[in-house]
Image (cartoon, rainbow, N blue to C red):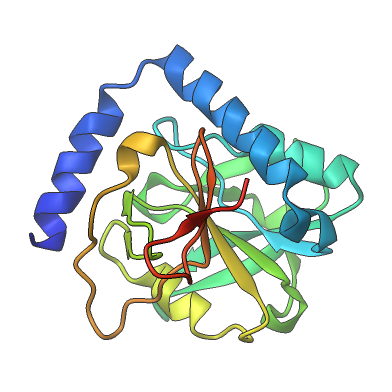
Amino acid sequence: MKKEIVRQNVLNIRRSLSRREIEEKSDRIRNLLLSFSLFKKAKMILFYISLPEEVQTHRMIDDALKMGKRIAVPVVDLVKRQIIPFEIKSSRCKLVKGPFNIYEPDESQRYPVSVEEIKLVIVPGVAFDRRGGRVGFGGGFYDRFLIRLSSQVKSIALAFKCQLVDKVPCEEHDVTVDYVITEEEIIFCKNEGGINVS
């Protein structure tokens, strides 16, 4: 099955979730993430700023900052076609709409951070499989960003269970994620077929 078909199928399913379902499932995912040893150990984490239909990260970012972690968020550079990480100091920083209607911190409230400082990446996406295959929105921004990181830096995708598919069609340039956290489990993707580590 082609990526575009997988993308549309899963987006249609995700759009059927009510606001209450999104909040409840996101809260369960948040609890699993915050109790995960990999998350607990990481000092600098790159989070995405969630859109209304995605797993909600605003409260997770707030919790992480309260835990004393440093938090970076992506800013899209359309000219270079890449993600540039910027640190934020507060979960209540002013957000403005950037490319693709994705929110990013206002220029006055973003602080440069080097890629080398990032120790964990929280990855968005549309569809995932248990081997770490990922379908995003087709821009390749996260693939290009993840490939720049040290092999020691792990990636965790946040997804509702309905976003899991049997197999994501992967191309040579696609970068898999290390873990997927749904409202029910933490999946370690680097083992064949994935295992539940919760």
